[in-house]
Length: 137
Image (tube, rainbow, N blue to C red; front, side, top):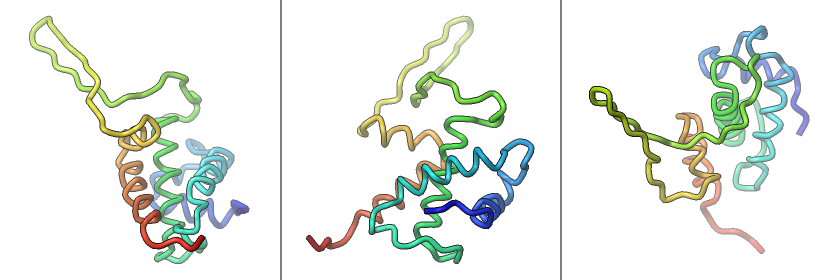
């Protein structure tokens, strides 16, 4: 799929303009994550992409792209992508004592990473729906 300027502009306004700043989020970064999102939503269960509000593939692509941006870049893409794996952790401090531990998960690492952002959680929900139903072999 060709990621056009119209798709980039549509994505920029999709989450109430959260990614609208071209200075903070340059087009090449948005294009890169949308290309990755297209690959993640390539199965037939997603349907065809369109800029219509009811496009299932559009929703999936945009949620995955937003997850990717938050997961890898955080609030500042100028700092680049860090190489440290992120895991769901919990910590507690009482006085001068603290403890941090990994929150147990029943998912593999690929799916568990989706739980790191609200966008990833919503994408995971949609991906499960995309995989439902009968398949013709």
